[in-house]
Amino acid sequence: MHFITLALAATALTGASLANAHSDLAVPQAQPGPEVRKFLKYDAPLLALTHVRVIDGTGAAPLEDRTVVLRDGRIEAVTPASVAPPKGAQVVELKGRTVMPGLVGMHNHLMYTASLNQDEEGKLPPPGFFVTEIAFTAPRLYLASGVTTIRTTGSIEPYNDLNIRKAVDAMQIPGPHIDVTGPYLEGRGSHFPQMAVLEEAAHARKTVDFWAGEGATSFKAYMNISGPVLAAAIEEAHKHGVRITGHLCAVSYREAAALGIDNLEHGPVFTDTGFVPNRQPGRCPSSADIAASWEKRDIDSPEVQELIRDLVQKKVAITSTLPVFENFVASRPLLSKKQMEMMSAESLRSHLAARATAAQAPDKVARQETLLKKEMAFELAFVKAGGTLLAGPDPTGNGGTLPGFGDQRGLELLVEAGFTPLEAIRIATYNGAQFMGQLERIGTIAAGKHADLIVIDGDPSRRIGDIQNVETVFKDGLGYDSAKLRASVRGMVGIR
Image (spheres, rainbow, N blue to C red):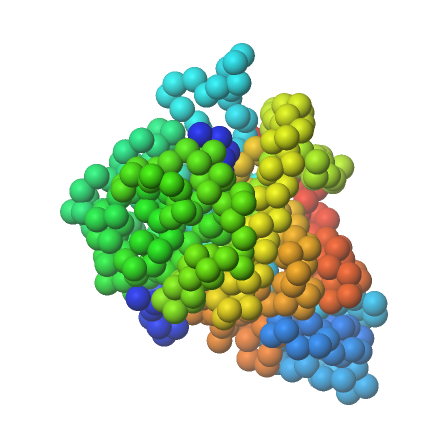
């Protein structure tokens, strides 16, 4: 969402510079600590995963009946299963399973909407809307679901996120590789008292400079930031060799693209204000006005096609966050039993109450479904025009988008949008790695790359729903038991 709840309710850098900024994603030298060892299935230095189907993440057709050899945390080779495994390898028979790259989550958080905190009239009382850090449950759920790298895409407690990254890298706790986004770069008028207010360019520069020095490897601008302040933040981030994204409102997509922003979150149908009639410069229109400006606007219309061309020309990536929007559509399926078991009692109560309230307004439900479909159509058209689409679930909103589970659902929704399963997998693996300057390390299955892999029972290239059947997740060659990771956080999402 970042905080899509209230959003709905009320010069590209070189790969080399980004690789340097994210050098902490190297294969770790530390040995697994006791908390990590609890969840390991495989920790041999030489492994041969035999008789597997390989989806390499490039969009190419799957390779059947292969052996994937892992040595010292890296992929050594992918061979026909008829080729004998290397001498001394621990052989893991995985007939009927698929091996694919670990997901690269590009809109993920270590926080969550624990409760909407509404009063008896359904409004948010002062001082506003709060989110809860879930630094214990989120890393485990991401990893259990096959997400081996995340970008936090906005931090409420950046020191917490930085320290969690250090603990994961030191192998003291299980979790994915983490690109820590600095604190939200927000302007005046936010509903979130946990965010700073930046009203001057100098303040934005100082903030970016400070947090880049503290270890933040990306930045995110938020809804009420002004154009001049955003321009200063973009310039300062680029000086530090890191990228900046935005969930914007007061600044439109095309205005942000002209300022040099690298990435825009959520897609335009729910967030871009460029088509709002009589829009006041520097002011964030209401969510109703934004929705109305898109509801009857055709994706093939000249003005939308011009927006797409502008974004593609300026190499601005778009992050698809379809799962967080889907949970506002009351006609869509409720969470699975497995997901509900992960949630705290209050988080589940709050989410179900929000869905029940939404279902009482059928006309609004129909409009939200229309807007969701329109966002899907935009994302498909954007990619067909040559744009770079990234993927992430945004585990905020009304509490129905859980870490990890939401990443998997994102692939299913991309397929619903019109992408093939292999295209959706590429978006969620290759594209994220490439955008982060990490493609030489992760994002595809190839000899020499880090062994960040998912073992799935089934074939997501034919049935994208099989992406939910994650059995084992390899990160830097260590194989984690997905079921054990999930069991360790049952009933805790929203609390820890």
